[in-house]
Every structure is written in C-alpha cells, then in structure tokens.
Length: 81
Image (cartoon, rainbow, N blue to C red; front, side):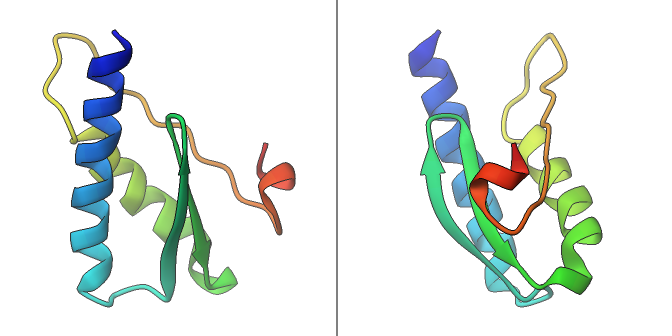
C-alpha cells in the first residue's frame, strides 16, 4: 500500500506543478513530507488555491473508493496542522 500511496503523491506533484506553471496563482510548491505537499501561497489567494489544489490532488488516481484530500493553511507548517 505504501508504494501505491507514493505513486499517487508523485502523480499529484507532477499534476500540481504543471498547473502552477500556468501562473494563475502566486504560489510555490515548497516540499513534500510523506503524503503531504507544502505550498507558499499569497494570503489573498489561499481559499481559492486550496479548492483548486484539492481538486487536482483528488484526481491524481482513479480508485474504486474516493480519494479525499484535506487541506489547511497557516503562517507556518505547525499552524497548518
């Protein structure tokens, strides 16, 4: 199962990176930690960014069960948890 999870997060990273390259958001993918992606996003764009990145990450793999992505924001990683 861990291998599948790693493949899904890698696909999500590729998809999100391509989307970020379009330049619609003032945002950067900063790092990956296990099954999490960490971004720096302009504060005024956070809510819309979260909606869009969740949609893209949830579409990273076709599964028989829903792929649910939770997202939080904060001034730092600790606050976002």
